[in-house]
Image (cartoon, rainbow, N blue to C red):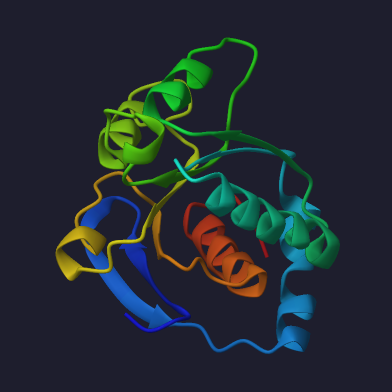
Length: 179
């Protein structure tokens, strides 16, 4: 898969209905469109789960760039394994509304796969959260088979402007954002 392309789920209730899309957004069009996210969105509590610290740092920077460009207010936590994700989601004082979950946690000693973690998230208190699956495996079989994921990013992850556009589109579909 070429750089800048990502897989997005066409309908959040139909995990097999994915579209391959290449975003072509100019910086100006994103800045005029994405303030809607910050204006209507709640304070986002995000959990990034990836076994590689470099990937977590890179994605965190991209999400924080959204704060500057469109007024989103993020609290971002990081973790290295799926098991840690589930421990954090069971804490009664923290409810995440945005997850980015890697598929493989091998290098950090994780046993669970990302798809298993997503399945458990969908059964717990954060079941209504936006869940993004992220994988370095660019094979179509992996990309199109993540039940419960709202979006799928293939590594390298998209630019902040593309993330904002996809997030806005998803929230509009889920009626979590009004025009």
